Image (cartoon, rainbow, N blue to C red; front, side, top):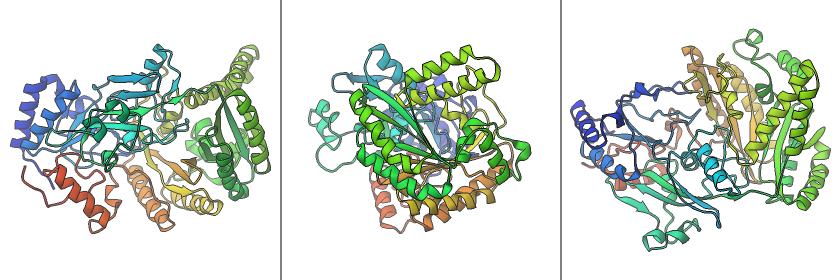
Length: 544
């Protein structure tokens, strides 16, 4: 493992300051970089904040020369997975948030090249200023999160291009020795066609720069989904939990019947729905968990059923009309309610809220605003509506008009995100594990199943806890490991890990681990880049 001494670190810092200026090399506590919703705590000696991509090669050469490890972040808003914290202690943070240029945009073909600091909100503004009719690949993490960072973590959304890394066509990265990696078509003089075709020519190496530590990615080119002629959201609910085994294959059937028009569907259990609708009733919780009778009462009060679904139709008017008929036919037998909502209906509800008196007006306005936020997300317009989930157990309400920052605001959140086959029996086995294990650790079982395709769900289970309570924080992290152990026995494994769980990857003797270590040593012999991030640190370290 790479261990640097104070003398080598001080020398590296001096050279970085000489190169960038004192303001670009700061202490971690000057920007709350160490805060994390998971409770992770790392010793971070210093944070480097370069202004341009062109500075990165020299920065890394300095790090390699002094054998100082560097951990890269885009904006540091990796909520639930470690925020801006490195995997290992004593890694210098390389903060790329100031690299926020939209380098190139081909409006006719719909491809854009962005740097790490380009957020969902910035890309949306850029497109709006040009009246460019494309969707931003949004997530529920909020408008201030990095487009590039999410794609490299293989994040996803419910807009037409669900898999965000699938949309990435070209990568530019800096290796540990300062060399710049470009894909072969670009090296051969064809950067334009390189940005239009993902697989390029020869061995596909771009994937090494996702969920790994083989280089510092400074630019990606990605394809944008065109804005549809119409967008219609649909919401459905099922009162009887026993219908889950029938509901799940029906969701698969919907995706196959409406390929290209309905691209993703979310299924949420009633506790997950309640977390979006009702304040957490702290006084009624037992060891942090809501008893069944309290959940039943809240569900009745807020008209929440056992399973609730949401999706969107992206289509022309004629096709959307036919799609609604198909949805009624397929979902009708397994749901109690199916509602279609578009922007016109939301505007009507908002107008009605202004006319009716008292509490009824408040309820209608609240529902209309929530629907408007959901429609914006589906329409590639980022907002922080979904981010409110992180605050459910925190006891802290963010001030209106202030950007939500769960790490800064003391929220306790760890994401457990396993993959589950879209089969009724598998969904049931999985749900039973979550509902059994979470309460044992003081965690309420909030479950979302999101279709990644017509074969596989990714389930996001937010482990929400009081981060001010060290015992609750330890229990939440223990819950994560208990869920991993229980789910892995059934074949339900996460697509993504947090900074405290990298040790759960296959052991060093596996072919996967030995191969990634060999590749790591080949491109980063000093192991200075993000040590421990998805690739185990090995003692076989070549001299720098």
